[in-house]
Image 1 (cartoon, rainbow, N blue to C red):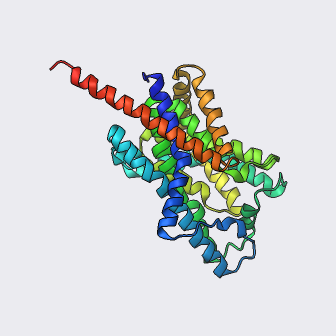
Image 2: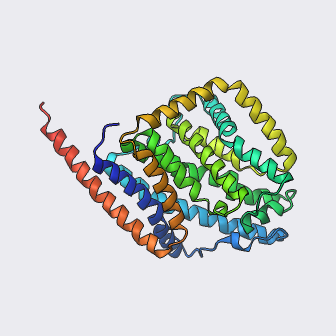
Image 3: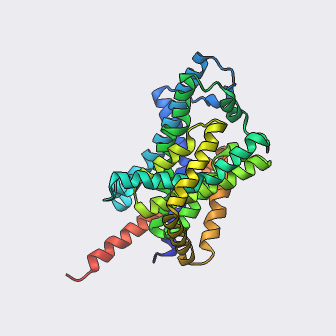
Length: 341
């Protein structure tokens, strides 16, 4: 994709700036609405009573809703001002593809992207590979026969999160980067940012390292299918399937089903891998893909450890991006005015 160096810098700064500065908007919204920001994951235990789990569900739903609102209260006006982005440009479309085909694409993407993670989970069930985050272990140890458990995981895993994260990471971040960097670098950069934003896996043991690798593979698959279809329907379907809790017997049955799906769709999967690899090879300059990959991962990790300093850095990046985009918008307007009639 032909684009200026400054346009690429603006795209990267905007995405990283929104990623962090959205937290400030979240805090402002919470203060305005009088909603206390509590992280209910810290107080989770395996034997939490039903009332406690419902309260945690309420708090988690409020926290996530404010987080997504904080991002999109920045994204939508900036996108409209800069390039008049429509709903379809955020992936909220079928892109002229039948709904059934999009759902099937999501199921195949789930099978291809999640195969490594499900294999790791199956091995870990029989040969423990390491501890996970305390709150995640508490969820795994809860009784899964309670409806309160399924409501909690719907909010924190396979429903609200699957929609909100896909809207942000693929619908906004990936599409914004692809505009000025191309699909290959955008897929890799967002996959790294998405993967390392999952702090529950940033633990030095075999299980967590394996989960990071698995999550990165799954994120690349989600990024590819979004770039291929320009619709978020397949990614939301795949993300929801990834996040549905599963006991060990169900994990093993799912693995068998995934293998069957991949065998049936082997031609399409192989073609997709070749096409995605071609996008990466076409990226120019050559250092762009590894740079956005390392940069996305490092930024996500630093955001979890530097606190208020990252808020300042994010604000500076966002202001800088808007300044560069103002320059770009003005240049495009002048170029249009100078075109011969």
